Amino acid sequence: MSTRKGVKYSSWIFLNISFVVWLILFLMRISGKLTSWSWIKIFSPLYISFILLIFFVGSSALKSSKFEYFVWSTLSVCSLGIFVVLVSIKLNSLDDPNVNFFYVLIPLWVFLGLAMLLRNDSRDDNGKQKNYRTKGFKKNFRIFYPSFIVYLTIYTILELVSQTIHQLSWSIKFIPFFVFIGTNILVLLTKIKEPGFDMIITGLVCSFLLLLYLYLIDKIGHIAIPFIPVYIIVPFVFILGFFL
Image (cartoon, rainbow, N blue to C red; front, side, top):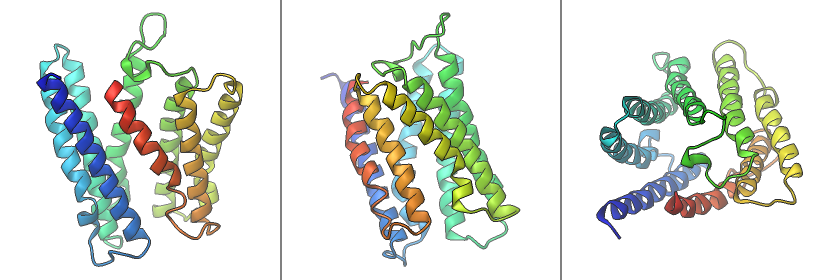
């Protein structure tokens, strides 16, 4: 194994471990444990991950001959990292008027816009995906990926309205996700005879959203239950990362 691959695999393992540690701390905090811990401390594993990501993405982008790749890589990682930091600060001081929810969401919107831009720019002249991010995936990925970005953006706007203008119920705020789930269920039904890895991931994401909604409307008693699909997704993604 080359040194470059060794660093890549080591970094991937570290990133996954950091995410799992954060997920455990996050669920413990929500379920009423670790209440003495600040949200900044809870999110600290993600801070370490983003510092590592910025270093490797920056070094990789500098080696690329394309300036736009450097800009996209740097902005993507930094915007998502800033969002994570702002979320932890907001959770730590929910009643602080100086931490405006609108400003917390701006880095996320920047990241989502860059994520959609990547997908559009990775097509060839015939409209087909040439980027490794879609290699080996079925056609429903071309619906899953952009639609999730769009519906997540709509949800954040509804959440912003609920937080700043008029409180909305979870049923209303989850309407974009209901549409997303319905769309992907139809796609999965058309692909039932062609099972693939993408079908598993899509089904697990939809299951997570449905279980999360049921928890938020008090139909499920424990926060750990909605995250069961996430527990399954994490090892799938971990293994997939070694083949990309």
